[in-house]
Amino acid sequence: MKDRKMLNEILNNTINELNLTDKKADIKIKIKPLKRKIASISLINKTIYINKNILPYLSDEEIRFILAHELLHLKYGKYHINEFEEELLFLFPNKEAILIKLINKLHQKNTWKS
Ligand SMILES: [Zn+2]
Image 1 (cartoon, protein in one colour):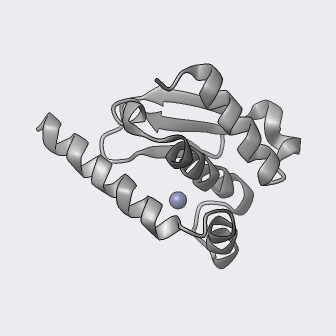
Image 2 (cartoon, helix red, strand yellow):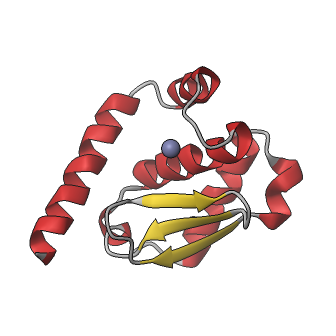
Image 3 (cartoon, rainbow, N blue to C red):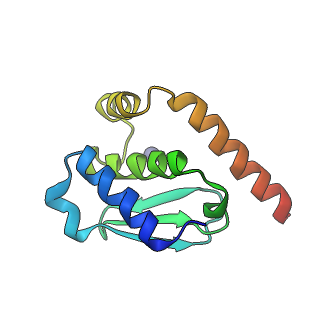
């Protein structure tokens, strides 16, 4: 089960990995149902939203990947610019495989609900 303590641990580790420690105090995670996404970030509120319906099905690595992705938006802005993609690939050389699994989980969950 993915509890808050564990999420915060993964968040803190990922913040350190991405050298975002100066922003650390402000970054929050909120768990809530999202319609079509696994996660998103509000750059203004420095808040990461994780889809409540999918969270229980995610592995630690997938959570780490999702948080890294959203935190990279904090670092590089709204768009997936080259630096964004390069850093994500550096952290997750297997990023394509992780993405495929995540997309499958999102689709499965949406299918169950409808
Ligand atoms: Zn993105």
